[in-house]
Length: 54
Image (tube, rainbow, N blue to C red; front, side):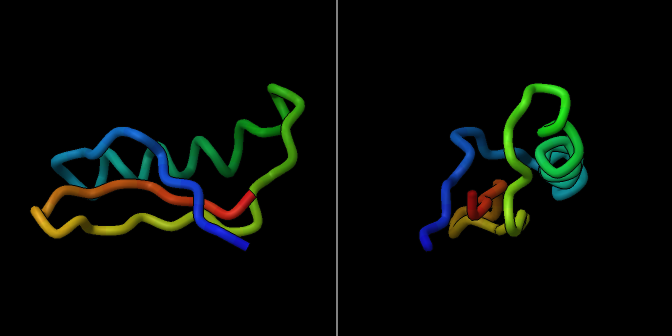
């Protein structure tokens, strides 16, 4: 399985964490399957992003 990267990078880990929780919790609202794993990662330039395995 491959990681799917969300397109936006955030300046704080808190902002990326909020998006990660939203991806985990909001799947049932929109009829999507919940991702197997959601992770907040740090880029080489020090910004934070979200990636998940569908």
